[in-house]
Length: 495
Image (tube, rainbow, N blue to C red; front, side):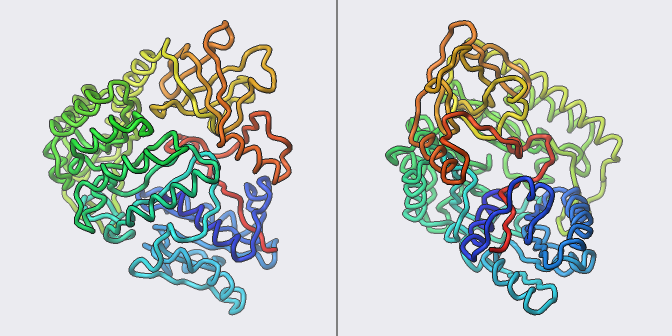
């Protein structure tokens, strides 16, 4: 969601007459305007924000006229506190008024003073805003914003507001427009996608939406994130199984395997219900890869509670999991609960959980060896592709695949981002698969797509040549990767 918000910010700036700074300049903060889009889910977000602002202070001092804007969830939360701590910031705007960014930059220049504008409720639905999409072959589509849940550890509802759903026709129009522009994959976004439709009285709307989106001509892959276990229903499983374009992947947040802790978190499901959902999904989609979120060290968590989390993780057989040490967020009920777990205890449990999940991920990925998969080639997924002489992308189940090209590969054998390649998996590592079948005469077939054509056309338009080669570039890794570099969409510079 934050990446998609950044695409909206970049789109608004381009519409207002700004142009993206060259990639090398942007990475070094060398731009007339730098916008930092922030998250507030974890405590270290604030540390990273103010660390980045500290670096920018000296950059701005040597660059007259440079402007710095801070938006997103931390801006919504800290408000004028950002300018108090970093008076060289020019603009602060929140999650409910993304559309104000260009006007606030102009006003800050005119008034020669910082502009802080935080709306208390959504002013303009973000999906109606101009968008500079980072990818032409895959796109994000918001189906709702906000959240109606009251999880005691989560600050999102207070910063994003109550859930608001888009009408199905608007969503389908956006999906069709993306496909017309060359996209063959979309990911539907919402804090709780499977409560979509409640606001307009249709509890089965999400399953219907999956089927409708999956029927859009030219669209080959549909994904969604994130569902809530409490609202996950059989009709969604049926829609996934019956709609060929809906991919066999599911991100289902567990948070804890202890029913006692889940109750304290106000997560309205229990561990057996969670495992039952996974059984249902795998019964309908045997090849589904399921990922999750898990929190370690929630207040009051005992060793017995943690052992329950390990038990559920062992049974769940996640292909991967995003694991977090509990981070107290001021303003949430959990921040003031008794029984805050000592840091050393949390760290030790966290390391045990990671070791278990790494073991499971290794086993689950090793089971993929020998499978023939179709990989959607991506731009910027493989950070070691240049040295390994492989290219990278995602299989249908969303596993990251690094694949080798044939030794005598001609132009037609080299896929572009957006093309699809059929290969056989030859090795499974904890966080990726390797498919070197092309090196031993095994399966290797490139299907050139409209998406690859669109990528090549954009590359040529921006001076990158014909685009017949793969053209990976450095950048942010996959969501949730350990790489902490910012997602660089291209910092705008004034025309």
